[in-house]
Length: 234
Image (cartoon, rainbow, N blue to C red; front, side, top):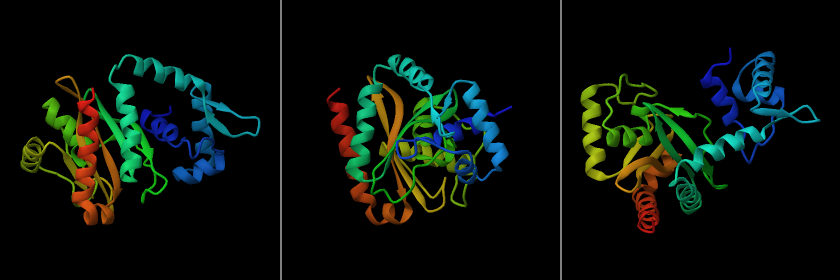
């Protein structure tokens, strides 16, 4: 059976830059045998999430769009947040993201990449809460204690004491960052996105560690300024 994590990774491979995949190319992209990639694609096509083109390649089906429309229609704050992600991506020239909580799972609902961003668009849908800026924000404001710590890199938080220190820092500063805690050589900066008095999402930017450390203050002020201005207009 196709696992949810694997299905999410495959669906996440489709983007505006890469709207179609062939079996061979997807297999190379995922690092799996061609037969495995074909089985994944066939399963998702049968389930209605993909469609096969006359050329034998695969695209997302309109069923995905229909499901997405139903989901976002139930979130009155989503259209404004979606527009904000575009502003962040183009304002900071990076990958911009919006993450939400599903239970205790941190889910990346939107990503957008500026053409000049210095990293590729990540594929992960479910993110490690304790190793990402978005996870730190969402867990802090939902007052969730992690059940486990994701040791993604040598810089990841791995103890309750480190986590308590990080939560206090997030509350004090009003934003969170992850410096090579999730992916070696990459950093994320995230801030809370509020609807009324409730934090409904975490939004921010992702870029190379080299650029983030070189431009940290400028990036932080730019992100906080864009988000603050957008939230004041709501």
